[in-house]
Length: 130
Image 1 (tube, rainbow, N blue to C red):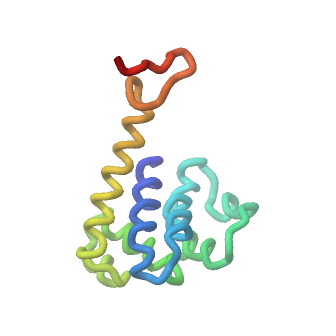
Image 2: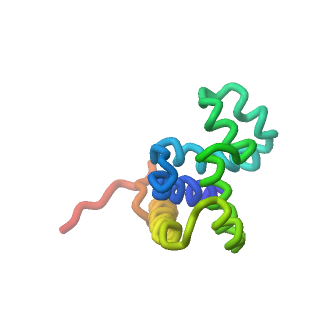
Image 3: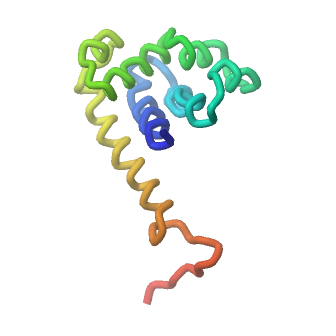
């Protein structure tokens, strides 16, 4: 689920200009879009105490507004629902490069977090190049 949230966030960030949305806003919408499943609470409770605009909250909970339509298009793409992608106002010329970029980005994060990846654990000293 974490990788799905990261994928949605990165894709959203990349397609945001297509919808006239700031990349930061769409990143947040994508990242928070499955927060309910990640923490095991209804989305209404999750968002209750978060300082989000009404538009962002509605995009996450109801898939309304520009951010909601973009998120719906991302979800449709995840499910291979090409009509849903088109209905959201997206086309593959915009979505495909964003999707490829997101895969590369999420894999790089996964590699950094895996043992032997780029992250330095508390028990391991960084090595110096020779």
